[in-house]
Length: 374
Image (cartoon, rainbow, N blue to C red; front, top):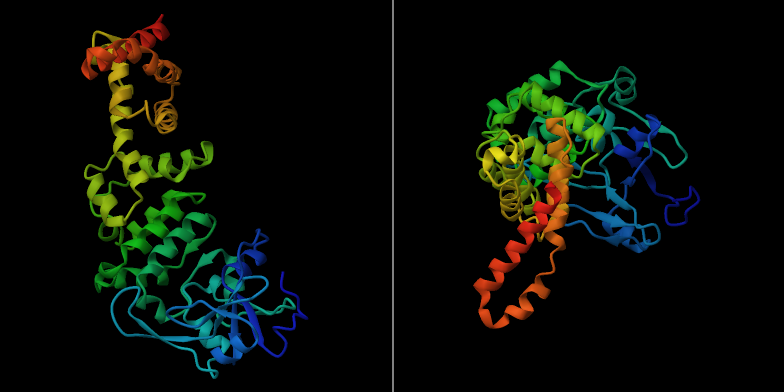
């Protein structure tokens, strides 16, 4: 915690900015705090012992608390997309100028260490009215802000998006600005939105401003999927991999979409496996094969459940939730198959060769699965 009488801050004009101010006013638990320093230069910060870490513009770490202190800056559009900006951090840059470059009014407030709020763009009023509104025309210069808007809509579910802000987002899409989004930033925002309170709102806002098909081409989203995502988030509190798999299960070209989003390999794998498991479990095993145990073991092997049991059990849980009936029989089959001691079977068959050992181990697993059916 930074003290008001912190000697490193003595004589500096410093403010907490962004999300910490917003969340504090909403009565929420604040996470990391970001600070802005007005009227100082890099040399002055380093002379006080702050540690430089910024690559694109001067950001410094407090040597004790390790909190980030950025010099107040303005930015000018110099190209397309997220990185198409040049920054200026002269000592004459004011706090109001620094806040003006931020995305939403509720994120464009500052607070002095003594608690005084600085709110030049009506953030407190928009908090009270529960409105997500852009600060100014500079919003349209950065396409990431469309994703941030959608993600905030998923987090702050009682907030409405201002019509003027939606209109500005549609203009950005029409102008091709969204075509220049950096995939890594897309995934950062999409993944956070999937873990927010109401993920459907993220996709709905993107759809409402015509950005969804550009950002996630081929993605199938409708009210039914939105309902499933919101209920899964609330009832299961699942990890990101599960939420991503559920979001993608009705989309055909999941591999291309995962590549375009730069989704993690784990999320991409879960998304590929879930429809396979869902399809298999939507029908009784005896409809897939006359030998129920054979069908179950084949799916376990296909899903790599013997090596990745936690993943398969998580996907079985999701499937059970989506279909509305438990899958304890499948879980028991998975655990039975994994209980087989492959080493004990292999030792007396060492001279028989790998194929004979593999066949014997699989037969033992099959019998173990059959035992769960009796």
